[in-house]
Amino acid sequence: MTSTTTTTTTTTKAPSADGAITEYVTTMIGGQLFGMPISRVQDVFMPERLTRVPLASSDVAGVLNLRGRIVTAIDMRSRLGLPKNEDGKPPMAVGVDLRGESYGLLIDSIGEVLKLADESREVNPVNLDPRMTKMADGVHRLDGQLMVVLDVDRILEISPDKLAA
Image 1: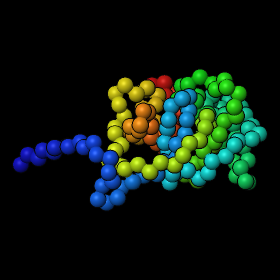
Image 2 (image 1 turned 60 degrees about the horizontal axis):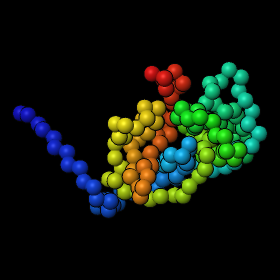
Image 3 (image 1 turned 180 degrees about the vertical axis):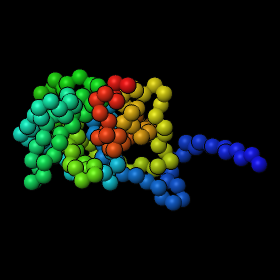
Image 4 (image 1 turned 120 degrees about the vertical axis):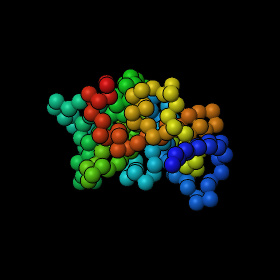
């Protein structure tokens, strides 16, 4: 017996019958709009007093104490292969956890919370930058811009040598 599967893609933006909607915290990094599922975001803060970590990779900006927790700060510009921010504005951070460890993802600015239907999320486009593709879990096409959905687990599990591959 042979089984075939047919996939139909729809462009409707209405929520599906089961109400599959995801809330995203939006951020800007290097002029690109990104979204992280709000369920993964612990807090948003202004990082102060970063302490460098000797021999750490270039995308580890340092560690800091946030309300009694040691938080590893990850420079998202570096992780995405973007140049350093030269506008003089201090970075913001999005606090996330992975397996009981706390991280602060350094971003340029925080945006708003968007509620988007899961069915409007598309797979990564073939022309998406390869470094972004490794950390992206799809995209949403919004009015005039593309929001790249970040996969927090992949961001934190990628080592610098895997990014170059």
